[in-house]
Image (cartoon, rainbow, N blue to C red; front, side, top):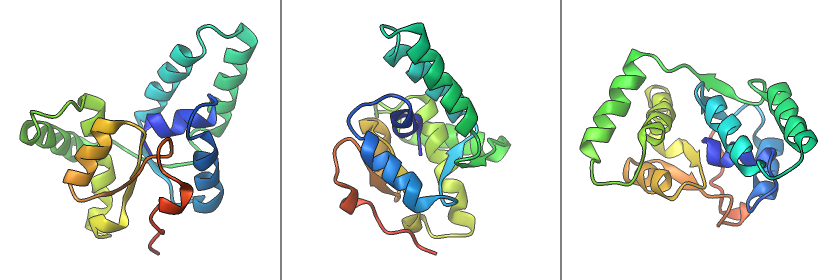
Length: 155
């Protein structure tokens, strides 16, 4: 899961219900980069900047309570950083940003133990979704797709 999906748990927006359902169904099978926290905190700040301080504080407190327990955090080691850099140079014409490449490289790490087709990138970021598909990962956009479109978990 990337930050565009995770933030839906703390900010009500299109895709919030499917993300909550994913968490309920896939507990223990969700992975995220250890850097997703910074992006989620930033997204909460931006999304709730016009809300009251209490609403913002509640969202932050809930995120801090949940994180990292909801996800299997994948550490970003030197191999993952090299892979992200390699992906960026191979896909130089995409609109994807540095964190998109880092999230993709993180999602590709389980390939050593599972085929890429068993990994689904959950994202509402159009560029990351396209990049993930081009790299052989399945994708699910909770903002635009019905929950039934989520690929079944492979065990």
